[in-house]
Each structure stands twice: as C-alpha cells, then as structure tokens.
Image 1 (cartoon, rainbow, N blue to C red):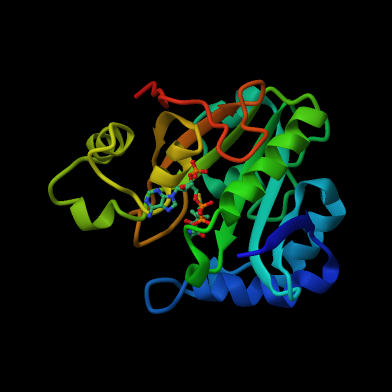
Image 2 (cartoon, rainbow, N blue to C red):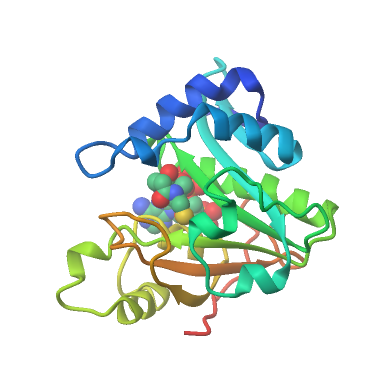
Amino acid sequence: MDFFVRMRAQEDIPAIKDLMGKVYRPPLHGPEAIWSEQNLLLHISRFPDGQFVAVDKNGRLVGTSTTLRTSMKVALTPHTWSEISGRGSLSTHDPGGTALYGVNIAVDPSLFGQGIASALYKARFALGQKLECQAFIAGARIPGFSALAGQLTPKEYLKKVVAGELFDPTLSKQIKMGFKVCALLENYSPDPETLNYAALISMELTNAPKSPNSHPKSPSTDL
Ligand SMILES: CC(C)(COP(=O)(O)OP(=O)(O)OC[C@H]1O[C@@H](n2cnc3c(N)ncnc32)[C@H](O)[C@@H]1OP(=O)(O)O)[C@@H](O)C(=O)NCCC(=O)NCCS
C-alpha cells in the first residue's frame, strides 16, 4: 500500500479520533482511550515537530503518533503514562530533553503489518537524531498478556516475548524494529488487555534504523 508520513495538522483531528475509535473499541475500551480534541490541539501547540500522521495516496489517515521530549532520567525511571505525558496533554514536554518519548502510536487495524508503524517510528528516530537526543523511549503495551495472566507473571511473559517464544501483537513488532526491553512498568495505564502493565522500551538513536529493513539485530534486554 502507498502511504507517506507528514507532520500532523489541525485538520487531521477528526480522522485521528476516528482511527483511535477503531483501535480501542468498546466494550473492552471506554471513550477515555480516545484522544480528546483539546489534547490533540495541545500536542500541536506544545511540540508540533513531534506529531506525525501517515496518510494514503487518497489522503486518508492510516496512522498517528504522539511524541514529547523529556530527560533520560525521567524516561528511564518507572512512571505511569499519565505522569509522563501530563495526562496526555504534553504539559510535561521539556524542549531541552535528551530523550524522545513515545506517548502514543496507532495504525488503522485493517492495515496492520504493512509497515505503517515502522515508517512513523523512522520519522520519529530521524527527528530525535536531528534534535541530538540520545534515545527514543516508550512504554509499550502488552495486549497479549491478559490471556496468559493465569499462567505467567508479567515478567515471565516479557521474557518469553523477548526470546521470541510468544508473539505479542504490539511489543513483538517493536522488538522486531530493534527496540531493547529495559523493564516492566506496573500500573502504566488502565487497560483490560494489558492488565495495566507495559514494557519500558528503548532505542539508542545512534543505532536507529534509517532506511527500510535496516534494523539493529538481536534485541537485548535488561530484564
Ligand atoms: C503496534 C502497532 C502500532 C504496529 O503497527 P503496524 O503498522 O502493524 O506495524 P508494522 O507493519 O510497521 O510492523 C512493525 C514490525 O513488526 C513486524 N510485524 C508486523 N506484523 C507482524 C506479525 N504479524 N508477525 C511478525 N512480525 C510482524 C514487521 O515486519 C515490522 O518489522 P520490520 O520493520 O523489521 O519489517 C499497531 O499494531 C497498533 O496500532 N496497535 C494498537 C495500538 C497499540 O498497541 N499501540 C502501541 C502502543 S505502545
């Protein structure tokens, strides 16, 4: 599929809300999982360069990502999504921060697996390199965990996903792109699929992929 990545504009807001509604569907997810118009406007005013969308050749929005800057110390210290993102408003954005932090990424579910997230990440990595940030860091959802929660602890689940013994619909893709799993985050964000857990993931920006299919191999872990 043909698509390209560009900076987010105010006119994209209704389509971003529609896309988020397709990704976070009821009854599993409530309306709070979808960005409010107010927060989407704040992202653009607080850090316009950090907000990207992917658009197909007909102009249809097929992916979105939200990013802020913070210090490496803040990004690598256990945190919740709400704390690090100012409840999604990016009030915590630090223009001098040396970590680029991934607040959100979402792709139209009918187009999963077609490289849209990889393209959004590459735009984010290029931005981080331009800003001379050290690393791209994020809390990665682990939506496959709830189905196995009776059999595995969250840490055991992460280790199996890192080892490639289990496929997680989100984290496995990020590992494939070269992210390192640094730690387990508890109470990251209310989410029935993850039981509120997330993986703290990091990509050194000196290693970040610049061209399609150029990924650091053998993802490592500090778990
Ligand atoms: C996570 C998400 C953004 C990934 O988007 P996507 O467009 O499907 O991802 P891509 O197609 O770019 O794939 C990324 C990598 O995973 C690999 N991959 C994709 N689907 C795969 C599959 N089913 N099996 C194995 N690998 C797969 C791709 O090959 C790619 O690796 P590569 O760059 O080395 O080729 C998307 O699934 C999503 O929106 N999920 C719901 C919201 C969410 O959980 N967001 C993340 C918050 S942390």
